[in-house]
Image (cartoon, rainbow, N blue to C red; front, top):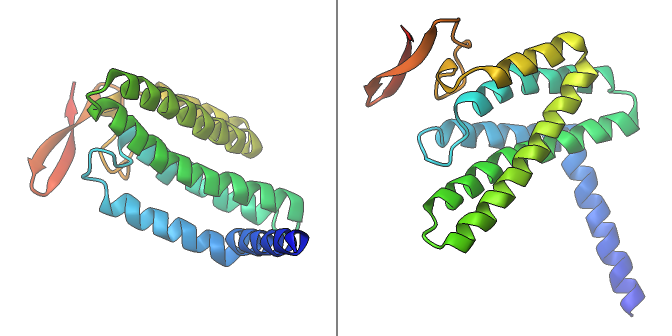
Length: 184
């Protein structure tokens, strides 16, 4: 009886993975992520500034391009979709874990959350690096430029263009929250 249960669970797991990695499943996950991204932009553990910019202006475009390029290569398509879904999950999880590290009053918990957030950050950055490498030299340069830019180079939502040299985004309104470019 145990072999039957294990086989049944394996079939269910494989079916779940097939649905998750189907075009429809990936699009649904991405749409849900983007809805949370928009809804949670004002929360302290939201995905904002450089991370939001990287997602909106680089990674989402690279994903679309790579998935189109490898549409008929099942192995590469599965790898790209898996990395993409992991990336979306890591962005959210890292933001939440990083927030918990800063909010915890217990020093051991702070350290544990901090180490976990750092590991998640390394993982999502590795996926960014992989996508940039798959896109080519220009993408690698763009990712490097975005990562080197200062904190004020990005608006909170990550929707606006990166600030030009000598400028930074500054809040001009709190309700609703809005930022504009200002000289440094």
